[in-house]
Length: 72
Image 1 (cartoon, rainbow, N blue to C red):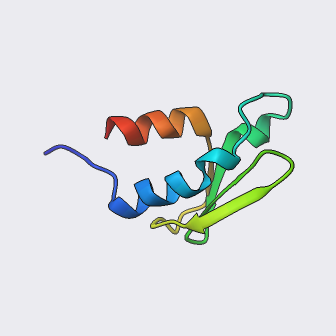
Image 2: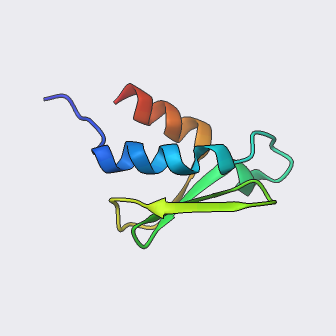
């Protein structure tokens, strides 16, 4: 059986994707923080968050997470 992200994950990622930094000046600004049912991104100037259907807590590199969601 093929694994697919939930619709909620794709929608939440779309809401915060533009807030993550694309420059690795500060490493954590190129990552998403997922925790407490929310996904959070920041580029150092603004912070964006959206409800996320995962209650676990973790930090994941943004580019790799986006590729994983696109491939799923």
